[in-house]
View 1: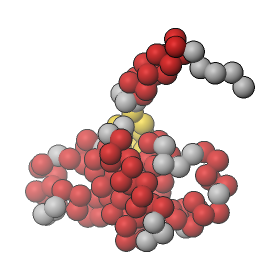
View 2: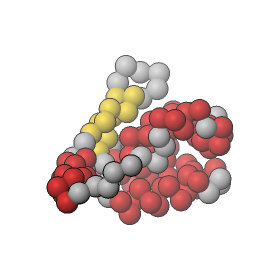
View 3: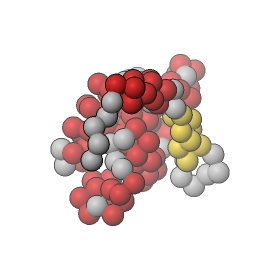
View 4: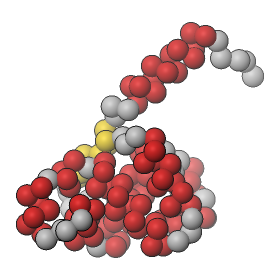
Amino acid sequence: MAEMNFDELLAKRAQREHDKTKTCRILVPNTEKCLISTIPNDAKIMKWFGQVRSGDTEKLFDAIDDALYTCCPALQDQKLREQIGARVPTDVVPLLFSVAERNQMGYDLFKFVGIFKEEDENDEESEDIVKN
């Protein structure tokens, strides 16, 4: 295994900065539509990671709702919030989507931001946390 050299480390930093501008399409279950998702800051990702791995279902869905709201600009529309009666911004998510829909969308979003990896799909613990 070779060590990374100075130029490779600089390239890694440039790639990390570029990755912060990535977007992803999160399919809304039972539709042919999607929500555009952006990458949040590291503090948010670490918070959600802890909530997801806690094994507490309530914390899991708090993380999903916060992540969907934070990463999907369409859900942050003030008029939408007013129209559906969301007092707290993240309430938009459970007012619009069922538990099953939030579960699937959260799983897809968490793969995008790196909380889950593709190989996690075969990880029994991961499936127990989000997929089931």
